[in-house]
Length: 252
Image 1 (cartoon, helix red, strand yellow):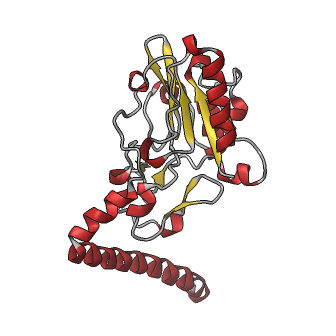
Image 2: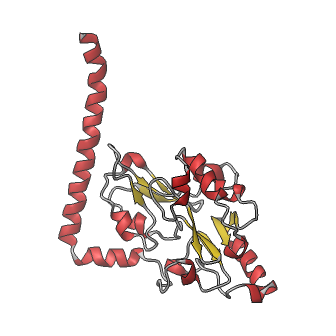
Image 3: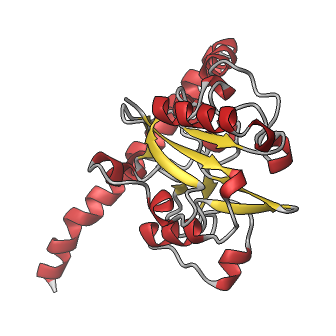
């Protein structure tokens, strides 16, 4: 069974403990200035956003069929059987196609780093693989963020709506959006009022990616070969430097 996260906006008080826990998990700085930012960035892989008197969260949605995975020419992004979409830093060539492909505008890039990486939430893949909860759900004091098996979380969301219909907008965001995601939302108001994209197709988006690529097969294939070449050259240089290091020390 695939894992998922359920965020219930009606329970969120905006304490940002999920943000701080995420920063600790990734060894990222969490200063007052960072905490004040209400947007995803290379320093903030989840964010609590204020919408009047209500709060929402932004993080990677971990789509069932991710367009970022489909768009990556070197397999730097992977959809795992457990549910999370994970990033392989050692494969990435920095093309940033994933950023263009993501319908939720999630991946960020380390523009100022000497060796930049793409940064995004991986739904605490390592923790969940060991049977532990995500850092954000473990830190949430009000149960606004919980994690578990996707089917069970959908059933729990439906139960909450059924038991308190006056307190919830009658829909679960993420069940079908972009073919279905592993991050689900409940809200008292329509989801676009919480900053979530409205009008997304109900089918998976990689099919659209392949349709676009098939229209320009020459460009796509040449681009993939070129990017693969860049990747090989870059890592070949690293291997040569590593091999030369001990030899140079001996010469001294």
